[in-house]
Length: 410
Image: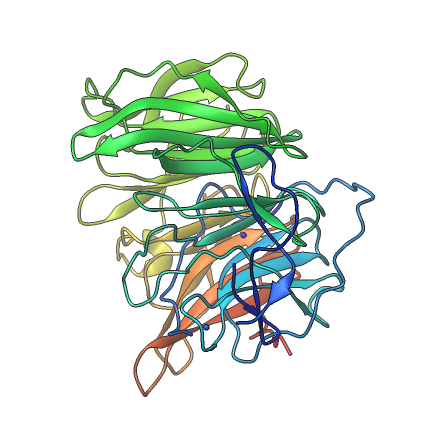
């Protein structure tokens, strides 16, 4: 499992420099002068929990610089319990104030790294080329992207020292992203109000930008879609023009070489999110209209069981914004709604208990993920009295039974 630029990093802006770009790519890296920023709203990580399998590459890590004052995280990604990165913003005098920070000692200390010259959305706006999510597949290979219309896509193969913009999107939208078994996968399509045309899965080895398109067994007009990746296993849940009650679940067990299809647990046209904890055990949250439901599969997605959370929530249903994060095949954490309350199961969802109740203050969790069965991370959005919000990183070392934070970045 693993967890999610130019911009002000340690008081300077990462601008385009004299690095050599690959064909069809734009590259930035060496620091130059910096411009500024309002804080971003909450961002939920997409395409999985934001945790990736660690692969030691031998690539030297960029030394990094100071953490920018006022750093506000929006996305978390990790390759181990101790090494993780966050994407966010910090006040600066420039129009793009995107920042990245990294720790290699579990959060005891952080450094600021170069970031791609792409804005993080603020105040509900989505500027062209925006990024909301950061993913590192290993110590060297990372990706910053935004899903949907106007989203950008950047990658690095030197631990964040330099960022490039591959040209494979070519005006299409990025609908999902994940890494596993040494490959990166990007779900893309040309989408409008009636669905998407040319829905395909782009694949590249994580150490390169050798992207190739894999055809998907879905009819034209399908989408948008949700995608999850765990090792060589890929799941894509998509509404098709012929969908009746449920979405179509497309699965590959061999990194996209072949695909099979079956019913998804999520209703057609209502979205949803699938989170794998192994090749066989999947957890899901699926909106049903006014509420959502939590489900679990123990056979790779062929069959699903609805999880009963009513006893722990006092009979209240799950909000469409419910956040579910598996730590293992049997343990998961659930925020049933934007109340700051967390529930936890250790028996595969048969029973749930309250592990965190909302303290004074108006907050909610926008994202929760686990790097391993013990190590969890969560982004908590806190409303501030003067208006707006700030984002905080909280951590768990006991499989989500307790949480500590906020983590200090400087």
